[in-house]
Figure (spheres, helix red, strand yellow):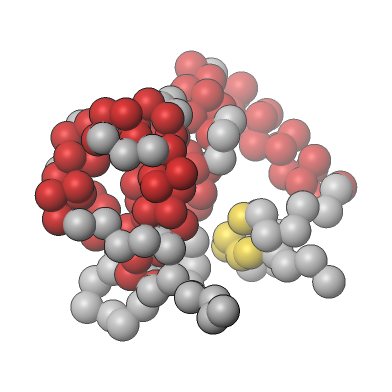
Length: 148
């Protein structure tokens, strides 16, 4: 049996679906029910393993209250999505991301600076889990760390 590798385009679009769903705090089960598919089928869409039909993409956009074009942002005219992850998208895609962003915005400027200092110290002190988007201190850019 052959293993199918997701297309970079399908993986990007599926990732954008997951990002928006998580930003709204919606479960896979709830979105699946809203568009008439099982949560397992939605997982396949989000992972890029199954291509999303046009009519289904419209239903997803409607359920997630976003234009269809949102799912294509970041693709450009290139043959593959950008290799460098978007830090804001990575934050909002994390399970705790939306709550952290909301709490951060309620802090004073001094509180925000203090939180950034603490977060950077914690990140520098402990290695990130494998395949987690993390801030690379030397470049101040986001990179994907891999397990050895």
